[in-house]
Length: 318
Image 1 (cartoon, rainbow, N blue to C red):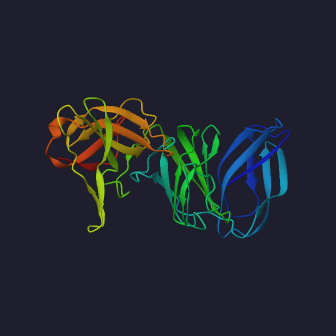
Image 2: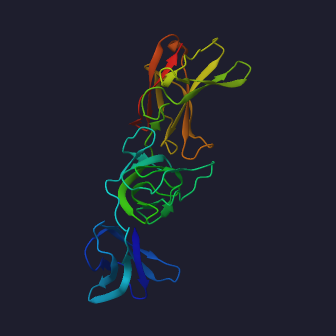
Image 3: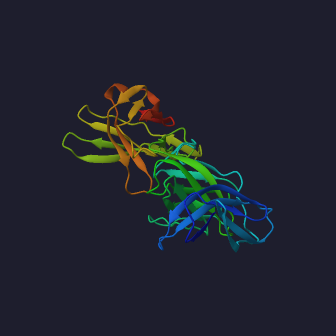
């Protein structure tokens, strides 16, 4: 959580502290508020064992000391979420990118399980919020897909700059924790059909006929007998057809150049890589399947974006 004090005479460089035990200061920073005064802020963690009650906030600058008596009230239920980890939702790598879909794992992240309904995502779900702050002081709340006591799926808030940042999760009881993260320009992840980050790609096939007609075909199927997703063999058809594997991922929309996509060891032409506007945080890649790939069956699909490799998934070429 963040706590701040403002007023006339608070200079840049002032320090902030709190009386009593159980409060850890993660970082301090300054901001000019609407009145024109300087405010000094601290991101803090409150120990679950901290004794409830009022604490004084102390701002010190040289020999000047200002005390905000009772400025922080610790109540029952205040505390810290331990062991917070942040990863890409596509592959669970611990590298995340601007505007990408991410997953936070921990304990007591939410007081209930809730899933967002519709295409417009809320910034509070089941009483839980996720707030990001970047290194230049921008602060944004994250759009939320899903919350539960042990997992949150959300988007890195648009407007958060590339570089070091902090992420604060606060549940419906006011229990919160802040973890430091690094926001990268790219951190490519390719979604798999079973959401594990491996196996059959969560993909579709785009076919363009000689006359320009386009159609989409499935590349995966759920087998109820096997209780898992399987790949559907992709028929490249006549030589006049252009057939593309459309991969869905996240963390690649701010790429500097088109990615490389190797299907069965053959580098294939990429005609598009960027945002997929019907789903928040989702990106997609169109990779034209080379006709030299006719016949191999199950193959690996390897994607590299600006020198960073994504997770390997599979497809089936007839």
